[in-house]
Structures are given as C-alpha cells and as structure tokens.
Image (cartoon, rainbow, N blue to C red; front, side, top):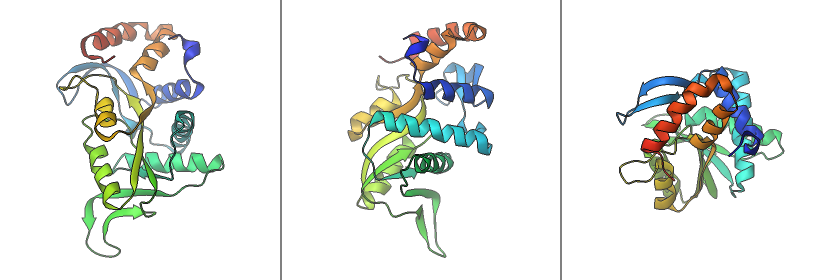
Length: 218
C-alpha cells in the first residue's frame, strides 16, 4: 500500500492523533505484557475541536463501509463521547440518528437502569476507541439483544491487527463470533503506510514492522 492508497479521512485521523498525542511512539507495556513500539489513547482527544474532527473521521469511515444502521451505541466510558461526536458529524451530513449509551453500574433512583438516551431498537452500531479483549463490545451486544434490537456492526478508531491466543486479532474474533462487520478508521497497515510517507517517522516504522512480524495477523 502506498501513501496515495490511503483515504483522506485516514490521513486526517493519524495527523490528528499525533497532534493530540493520542498516538505515541516509544516502548509501551500493554495489558497483554507485550512491549509495543506505539500506544493509542483516545482519551487524549480532549478538546472540542479535536473531537469534532475525530467525529468526521468516524462518520466518513462508517459511510465508506456501507453498513446499514438505524442508531449508534457508545459503550461506557470512552465510547460515549466517540459515539456522540460521530452522531453530530452524521447529522451535519444530513442524517440525524438516535444515540444511546450505558452506565457501568445500573442507576437505582430517578429513571433507573443502565441505559441512557434513545431506546435501543432496529440495527444498532457500536462505536468505541479500540477492541482489545472485546469485553466492552460483548457487553454491548448483550445489552442490545436484551432490548430486542440487533447489533449490526462495530466501528473503532484503530485496529492494532495483532493476534491473540486464538491466533486471530480481537476484531477478527468479534466479527467471527457474532457475524458482524468490525470497521476501523485506520489499522496498523495504514499506520505503516503513513510512517513511510513521513521521513521523520522512519525510525519508528522499522520498530512497527518488527512488531507486526512478531505479532501481526494476515
């Protein structure tokens, strides 16, 4: 893949992630114990302008994926602002859709329950930052099914494209287990393409290639 093969929203997303330091290079110990040459933290998109641009990237990735959906769902906690900014970006493009999210703990007073926002119904698309172990996605799917709605896909910012114990990546496991598409704004493959087009990142690219050779999936 060459730099020209990347979609514009993918380049904009990686530019934004670097500016906000949501994407950093170095040496990071992951929850799995692996030493990674890069780290992604969507919590660093912490200003209105950045979230607005991020929502545009999510919306464009969703539109280009061609997934049919009726509403968005953001898993607590990071998925809440991500689904919200995506819904706003879609509304700006002329598609005003319902949005819901959940609490980590069910509320026992007031309106009660664990869900906030529009009722879960129809085809529900889950929006989150990354799929690591897939726990939040599985919990979201269970909530959607319990409400009588249909999970129709998952949209994330970055797919690390690295294999787990099963030999599949976390996104591949979710897609296979639930027979739904998992779409990302960018993947490790696009990150490698991006670093190839930026000489200042050449040193990091070599570490990324080595990491993919050791842990990557096809």
